[in-house]
Length: 154
Image 1: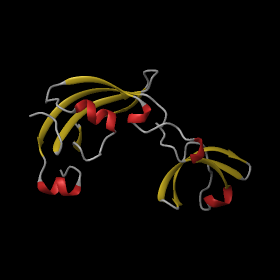
Image 2: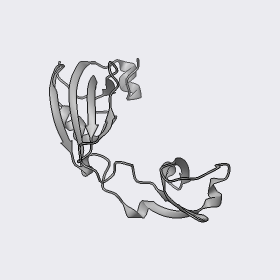
Image 3: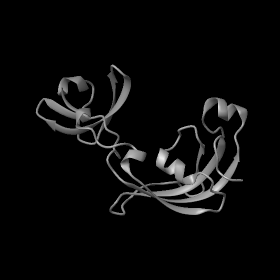
């Protein structure tokens, strides 16, 4: 069966950055499962998987615009340290949920200076070209419930 819209797909993958550093990998024996066409994975990878079948291996290079977008400096801002009440020590790399006009957003602490914290709402992989090594392990029909909910049920 070929990968197409509304099929449940299971893939094993390794994700590397442009320097070849491994950023993520599917755990051994636990492939990533998703509903194809439901927006569960980045568009560049989903497009590359279209039409593939179980057993297919592929290498996919996904530019930022087909992954997590380009970095947007407007998504970085300074906030008072006092906004982090209850946190013993705020350090770069920490992630927090922030309430914004557009709803809840994840922000990463980029820097801490005295009583000021620089937070960044860009996705950590924004602006990066992503390189995937993928093996398709399974393709099956999605259940009505999976299609209704837009994700795989175990």
